[in-house]
Length: 171
Image (cartoon, rainbow, N blue to C red; front, side, top):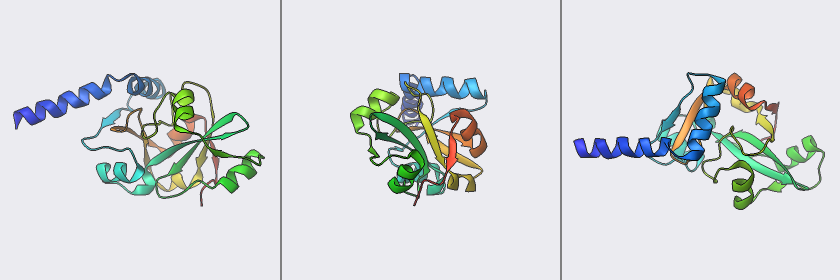
């Protein structure tokens, strides 16, 4: 048993040393000292996996989705139990052509790989839209730079830390 606990603790320590996770942690601590990274024993690569790992409602998981239009990128934060509506995005952005960014573009502009894209600490500044339906939860969970790392934050603090704009962007 001691070996298993040692291995588990070592894995958690290794995850917290990753540059992407440290970048998120720095951003969280700068905003509020008590926010911290949670390392998981199981992966949170998808919203469903994260909800299962955290034993929380699927809707309390924040999906950080990157969209592009005419060479510009935007991040949409949506609940794990909903889908982002391209039609609503097009109307909000006043654009005819909006699509999901590819994995290489996501990595290049956010600094995160898909499955670990955090709502904060991106390499470049983005406009961020937050789906209003996330407000049904006191606390929500966002990826923290790695598929096995998340952080817990209140909905109000999520708006403040991201400087996000609340909109109805899901279907």
